[in-house]
Image 1 (tube, rainbow, N blue to C red):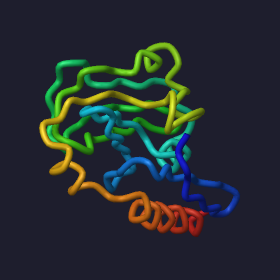
Image 2: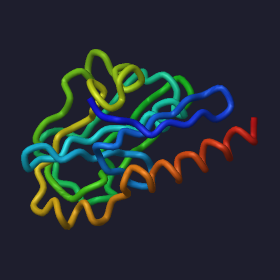
Image 3: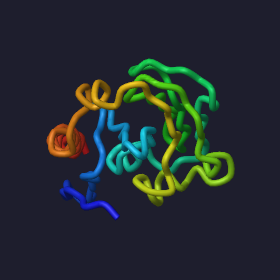
Length: 149
């Protein structure tokens, strides 16, 4: 189990897992035996609302970082998320078909989106935010949104 950076803004507590890296929009990437598992951060899933449907690009899809990897449909809105890395999707979380709410229940565990094969993790990781950098961005966004309420 990973350790977390945690903050409470207004009445919401947000966690950032420290064993993975993030892009600016809160999609995480975790290297596992030469492949990268991706998913949504706790902040992103809380801000988005209850997930009703998750459409992930199919296995075999080749993506560049910044290209659409998933569309998440919630009660509030449909949101497009982009791949944090360059690579090919080799596995899509089968739970997304029957239980996409796993994104809300366990965003760093069973709520993952896909596994990607990448050519060069060293080059990819250099483009991502470490947990502390993402935590700072996320906390700023959460505080801004709380001011609007």
